[in-house]
Image (cartoon, rainbow, N blue to C red; front, side):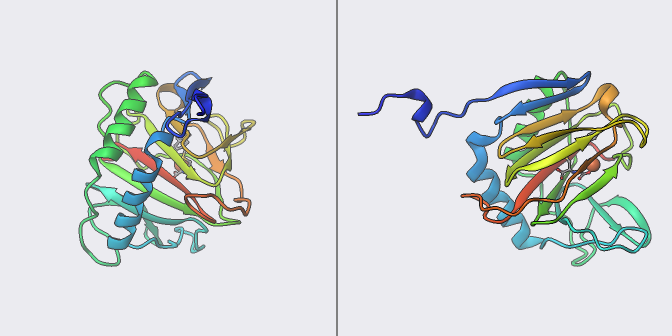
Length: 217
Ligand code: MD3
Ligand code: FE
């Protein structure tokens, strides 16, 4: 009989890493819910399929996206924005699952942001080579609310800098189950994701998924 707690499949270690004031990594915090989170992503993508959207400059993004919640983030030639409906189906986005909300609100609270009330969840899907160039998240109304990000599947190298594009950047690897909270003085830091390295994850195959929770409107 194996009584090693560390070998038990229900043992999900998690720990906290403080990056900057307002920026906290909760390593492994979503792992205990990984299969349930991925099942919800699958269900949502069955209702509103992943899309490769175009930037306002006319380039196709390499990250495929869908949304759930009251509003969803979209981009096209007209610009970046949040809207209540999917541009393809003109239907409202699926509701944000309670599980998503609960995990995001709890993570925000642990990072020092009680009362987080997300109304948008952007679901990003990375395939090998997919990347996100350095940018700020500033399409939301209230920068006093943090952003919560959950990584699932293949690892990615995440890049973050300061409040100016030219500020020097640091890199951290985000792996399956990591949650990052960005709020307070870190809310408008530049950030991005380097091209995804090919691999095979037992739960997501060739993909990385990232859920990003925001109070958008
Ligand atoms: C740092 N997504 O969708 S989430 C995005 O992994 C986005 O898919 C990335 O950036 C991804 O906009 C990174 C982590 C994140 C989100 C918001 C931030 C980092 C942030 C806001 C300020 C600083
Ligand atoms: Fe972002």
